[in-house]
Image (cartoon, rainbow, N blue to C red; front, top):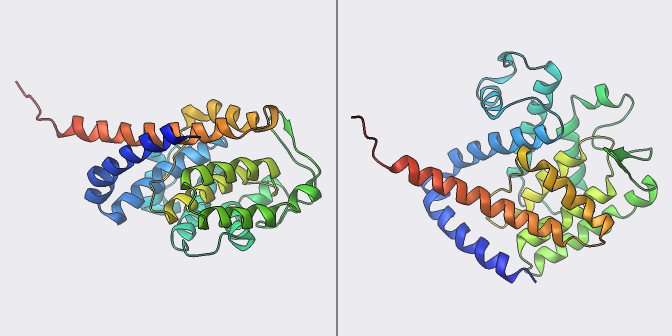
Length: 259
């Protein structure tokens, strides 16, 4: 299953690596990815920052809050930068609960007190959870499954399964468990990219405009009892992102006609 998607993905990934990532240089490519990924991942959760706002904050820090943006949105984005930087500098860390909790702690550190007074960043929820129109199960029984999810994912990575499939499967089940009081979506997307980056794959960036399809694919895990839709969405999204950037490079390489 997914042989066709894997073949297409790997063909595009090879071209993308050669034409975009390698030629841009690792540092610049990662900075570009951090801004794009942070903007869209936080926007999915309601953050008002645009990609340009995110770039300004990343380059100039909290001293330069973009016009019209709230301090809360600014702080949330700054926390996301810290979580991202931690992730990319700890790719050798075991895929375990310690990693999961630290990423969640960083991503919610300065905003959790506002959204959930009394909750502790990086610690599991002490009450049952709901998000959107979804009511999750008993939080204690769901949290009890987290260690097995992390260890099973590490075994899947060690067994040589395709990283995109592992990332999608982990992400779908993690969001089903929803173990933290806040930041589950951002934490989940960060660690899905941890899986991809550790395997030297490009980041998966789920754009705000694809949010509805993303949420539908997550819900189909519950309604249809399968994660096939989410895996297909991950492949489709990754391929579209790489093809779009390759197209941009080709178009911007053409000579301009002034007269």
